[in-house]
Length: 210
Image (cartoon, rainbow, N blue to C red):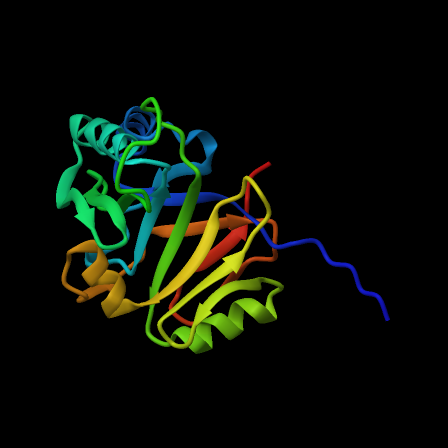
């Protein structure tokens, strides 16, 4: 029996922030992601690591430096300065609203003129049980693109949409340069083309605004 289903896609990431006007201004100046990042007011209690990283993948180190530079100019703080590592070049900053952003490239040297083009925008969820959460999303129509056991999972998403990946919570916190402890609201909602749901770690999905 041939069953054709639409591919689950993330249209936007909705950040819940104390001051939506200030947050919107920050994101426009820092990264220029347009309506892929939306903000709305929330005073939900939250402390420490919120369990997610927003990752921007670019083609070369100069693009990393440009995006991190505008984020810092707009009011972000440095969690990990941009530098070379065995896997490439990247850094991590924290937005004024508390969201953690990683900007990275697998290239260690510039391959052309500097651009601010973003190749991939990835929502990286730090979860308690990678295998269980992977199964939750597979059951909701997401196909796995890469999987490294209980360590890391990346899902297949349509071109142009936001990507989704899973990491263990402690590994995600280490990647971000922060302590894994944290309580309260994640202060993030995933806007997709799928029915509203909440995953085992409390990350909520809702239907993305048209």
